[in-house]
Image (cartoon, rainbow, N blue to C red; front, side, top):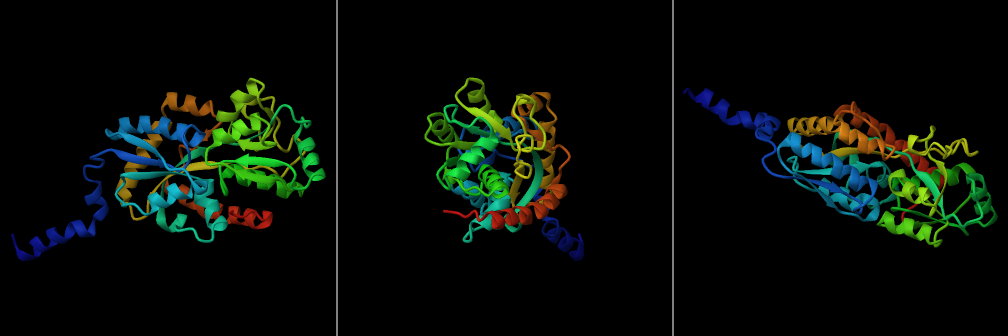
Length: 323
């Protein structure tokens, strides 16, 4: 072998780091960080997809819950991890789009420190209240809030999360102000609404609708432009008299920046295959989630570039703040 040929072979792996890293990937279990507590829609969605992805990847995909600070603790953990494809983030509107505007001392940059893999989907919120409260419609809730400035309370799963942003969107559209009660565990927040300790909550149909069906909660509206198939009787916010109060949260799969492109492609393909499974589709239909099987890596990157300034503008106009 000539000296130039030997030298070329030695430097080839350095010139093709993605190819070198992707060979044999994955060779061990993959951790999927969900930055929220167990039991919510992010957790159950990730576990449903992880089980199916494990079959495609021939390695376990293990969901690890890292709740706290509106999802930013888990996002930071992934952002600071090795960029080898063995740790992923269930990224959503809060930690990926709202956090830079909500937290001035945020220790990661979603667009710089995390790389998009593939979109997952979007699911609206239900606005729910205790059935014992006097308001029976959304406009009646707003009227009560207007009559008692900062006298009513609402819950969410954390500052800067999509339920918080949805509530801020409604307050911005109506000019009312309610007191925000953030929870690290959405189940606890729902229990406080059911128990009458909170006046309202913005929550996902997956977790709140069963309580509505059993009479423990009253659903006033859905935060989408269309009614959800699971609860056709619940009006949209526009139908309830408040156009402009729509906000539909979304989710996507992310990995640490500088993860090799071939590895990202492998993960994206596994997620796309999982979303095409009829059983997975049936699960998401039951959560009122619209899946994004065609939102690949570059499409998700472009979406995020538009979403971050849009959410930042919403936050600036509403006056929402951390703490």
